[in-house]
Image (cartoon, rainbow, N blue to C red; front, side):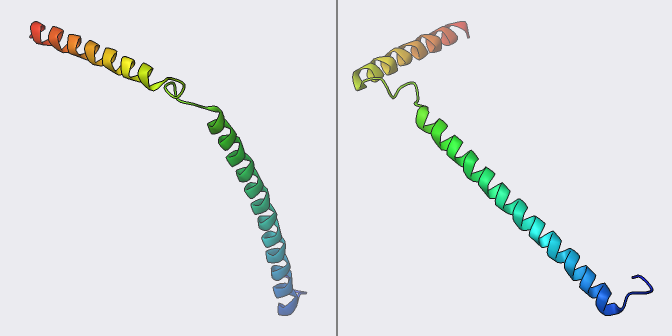
Length: 84
């Protein structure tokens, strides 16, 4: 506190500083909320554009892949059991 300042002036100065800081934080919050909304929109658009590799397959093709994978697993199991 400056010697020439009254306690009232000092308190007023502190309140002004606090008010400026609050205003600055509110503006920063607005910017961050906008950035967050923009990023969420980008993620949503990316997710819309993505499909898993099986979504374009018919049920018949999926069953064929499943059957083939089960055969391969069975072959691997037999090979591992023969090696032991």
